[in-house]
Every structure is written in C-alpha cells, then in structure tokens.
Image (cartoon, rainbow, N blue to C red):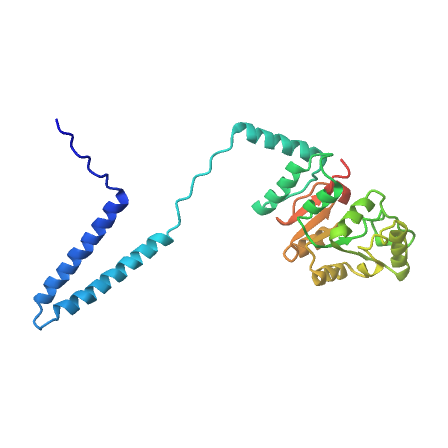
Length: 284
C-alpha cells in the first residue's frame, strides 16, 4: 500500500494565531455588512480601513495586557523533616549560651534574632560578629550608666565612688568600633560626673577612639535622659528604667531593657536581659 504523507503537526501557538486572524476577518465582514445597510452612502474601502485600524488597536491592547500578566508563582516545597530538626537543634543549643530573656513579636525582628541564634553557636564566631548581628547593624547606640556599665545602681552611690564593670569593657569596646556610642546618667552633683569620667578613663574606654568624654552626658532628672535620647535618635537605647523604656518605645527602633528579673515586654521592639554582657553572650 502507498504510504500516506504525514500531515504537518500544527502547534498550539499557530492554531491560536489563525483563529485570532479569522475572528478579525469575520468582524471586518460584519462591519462591512452594516455599512451597506446604512441609509446614507459610505465609502466601503475607507470604512474597511477604519475598522481594520480599530480591530488592530484592540488586538494590540489585549496582547499588551497578556504580556504584563505576572507568571504563575511556584509553590514552595515544604522543608524536609531532617532539615527542620537540624534547625530546631541549632536554636536550642544557641539559646543556652547566647540568648537572654528577650521578647519580640514582629516577624521581621523574630527572623533577625533567630538567625543570630542559629548561626552563632558558642565558639563559632567572634564577639565582634555577635555584637554586630545582635545590634542588627545599628549605627548609633545610647546607653545608661548606672546598673549597666557601672557597678553602682543609684545616683547617691556616685557621690562616694564609681566603678566600671570589668565584664562589660570588652563589649563596649566592640560596640564603639562600628557604632556611635553615647553614655548618659542622672547625677546629683558635678563631682559625681567627674568620678564617672575618671572611672571610664581608668577602664581604658577612652583610648579606643570610638568613645570620648564629650559623648558622656549628665542630667539632673530622669526626663533629662529621655530628652537626650529623643534628640540623638539612636537605633538602640539601653536602660534599666521601665518607665523610660515605655515612653521611648514608639520613638526608638530597638531598646534593650536591663533587669535582674524576667519581665513582660513593653513593646514588640523592646528586648530584655539580666545584663549587657548576657545579651551578647559573654555570660551564661
């Protein structure tokens, strides 16, 4: 038997194109028929040209809309159970050595600090890297002195002596390497301020170049400290006073509340730790 010639396979795109052209031709014939039934004379050739232009405009518009349509999103493949287990184990190990009693409700902040907990396992990274990530690349920090940097916790104690915590010195030096750091405190007299400056100098905090006496601010009231922070507009403020933390929560991007006991968070952007060193993983 003679072999039959194979018919060329018509692609879907060619078929759709032919159907579209046929639709336009039928539309033009329909318009031409309407022109013949009009009660006045119509130039058939001119009418056909105008109709063709109108049909072409509609076709261009439809094509443009189709090209602008976003491609369908691919569904995310679920994580393998082994990967989820590994991440969970990394978080639990990191929380035992690096995290404090910190709180965060917004998803962006939670992801940022979870990333730190997952990556910075004990002994894996330097203090400089941990400080940078903990501060979320913040470039300006304001910090209270009493109870955070100094052993003393009241202005009355500063009238007698001022002592810098030995464990906090290393953290402060790392912060000053990439942050503009300002220290502030309420004092009862000028002599108290002089004692604080001398203690900071003796601890070697003025020798790194990132901190100097001009960035140590004193005031006579707690509201004065709030005013300092509002004017400086830091990325982070560190304080022990819950009232100040609460008042600044809507103005400052992040805050760290230093408290010896676990407390309820004042706002989603407020974290807490028992001490500054604990927040950066210096103390377990």
